[in-house]
Image (cartoon, rainbow, N blue to C red):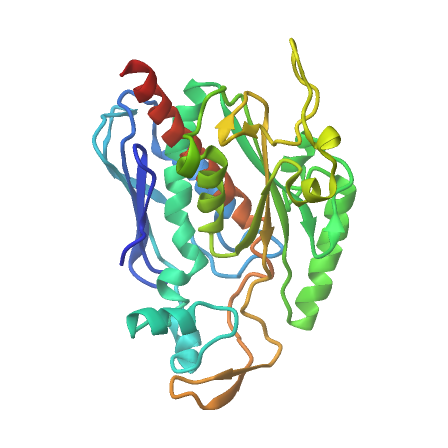
Length: 352
């Protein structure tokens, strides 16, 4: 299957299916002598691990990372890094009733149309579980960013219509939704409980903040930094929209308000979200993604089977109520990989 590799100089290839023996990633292009160990990767994986949040599936996976190559004595060697995560709690039997039925909102219909075959066990390759490899790759990318004092964080600013009214980044780790507003987080918890009782699911908005990004990252025209960031984030299955800086709000602004005045000390505002003409300007990069509701719901829906016959479906089993907050760390991973790729490209440009 094409389209499994992302990046140009820092390349990540994910592999595996939701109910296969395991999943993982191959990272090619990581510079040598980067401090790296299993614990660093595990810390990232633990944040997307299933079964440990109010919105999460009851599927329990340790998501234990095993580094199979590319690391020696706690440092990257410059050769490809391979990380594997075993599947230990897959229950394919609960998916057997849907083997010949398309689940609304899932990739069942389109995968069948493209390949003429699909792995119906948990969604196969189309499952959000594929992102475990991305997170492992993102952990490697973050280790490189640390050397350059670049930090990437993702947090929930909206869930189920509940919007964060304040952004205290210190509060992100103080609640299960990674929300920077503790009062909003409490309301989100109540909203999720209400939606879960109805057998429905819910979406929201995640904001990603990249601090310490130097000026000059990004390529003119087609490989703009914001274009690559948008592609990276849109490649996450549950993401249906991306905006940077003022985003869609800029369409309702005058140029006199949207432009960021420049002083000897820097920019007075950041409507550009840290990127001008596709190149980083040294300010914070601010991105928001729209996360759709999880498509697997108990409420009965209309669909068809493989032969085009009308059917109704109520999806049972172990499913998330929302991709948030487990998707947050996936967003961090994708942004981190883009930044590392462009850091390496800029370094190659300046030394050529």
